Amino acid sequence: MADTILDKQKHPDWNGEKTRMIYKFPDNTKLWKKYAEIRAESLRTDGNFQAATDFYLEHREAMDSGAEVSWDARYNHDEISALQHAMNLKFQDKAAFRSEYQNDPLPDDDSDEALLTVDEIASKVNGLKQSRIPMACDKLTMFIDVQKALLFYVVTAWNDEFTGAVIDYGACPDQRRRMFSLPDANPTIQSVFPQTGFEGALYAALTELTDDYLSREWSREDGAMFKIERAMIDANWGQSWGVKPERFLKNFFTCFFLF
Image (cartoon, rainbow, N blue to C red; front, side):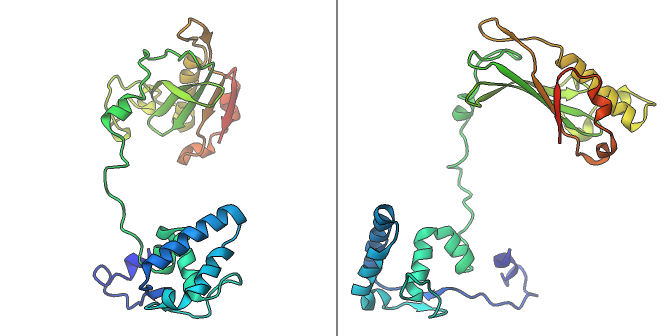
């Protein structure tokens, strides 16, 4: 944020000045690269970087050459100069050093390298039909997200290692189409349960959805049958905060967490 605000091209009305921990980096990059290697190995084997400090002491004149720091007294008890302190921070986390100490954050990585490919996404699909539980899973949970017009829900199957598979999801009332958004919902909770008021409509929709899904039996690949063991309802959306959870619980036969 500070970098953005102090950019005179974007915010010329701010008359700020950026400071840096290092105004000029040292000339001898080879010696500092060697220092970084010794420092990393010393931290792994000895739990400190004294060996790197000894190396710096031995070659300090060459390693300091060309460097300019903002505050000569800024270093820790186990370091011998502000330049060593700054370079240690740089070797520890280059991105954080550039952002927090140089006021010159690295550019955002907008490359597509980190994005999943179509093939990678497709490889996550288990190939099972909707509502079928994978063989390794033996527990079912349900989550319901409360909105004024719709209830969004998802049913997930889990194994003992907490690996999950979505086996069903949707909205209530059923939108009868694959593509829709909350603003264009049709039908809505209010249209399906008219003249009941906000609390009454929400209660009716939750009751209808949970009576249906919590009574279902879900088939695993080997034919074993399971029911949803636990359902969770998001109770913190806007107006729904005023609806008392206990009014819903009395009709549910499973354990709910409301949060």
